[in-house]
Image 1: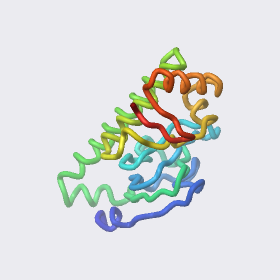
Image 2: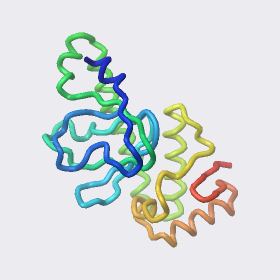
Image 3: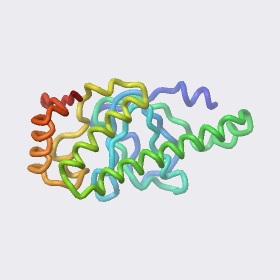
Image 4: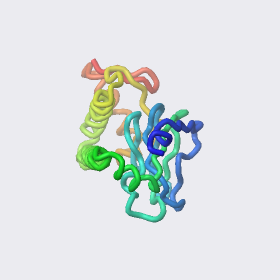
Length: 190
């Protein structure tokens, strides 16, 4: 059952939903490939999910998902159905530790994003968000020097709580200071 869940790969096309707000909570989803965006019930962007990260963790307590997770690119996920949790915990002692690790890591990642979002300065928000993306990619074993922004500029400005013009100025400043290079949505850390 657990092995079947983890080996069952589900492909989700760009702009399709992994799950939507209001639907019954049935699983955790581990992103194997691609990037996804998290929206609240009012369709406000709340975050970005990278390969290796797990979504649905925040909603294990609820009967229905509070957020929607949409594929920003084509994604591949592994689904771990909630109904198997007890059975798995009876088979392997490590499962409880795995769930605790997933919950802890998810809380840490949320706190890191919050620490970026509460910065009062737009330039600092943009700089710290790019560094957070690089650190997250590195932690999960992906290239962290060259990567594509998973959001368009309007979405990124919305997520960071700044205007698009502030975002553009901040990116220009980071380029001028030779901290990053930008080519459309491609970011290179210098």
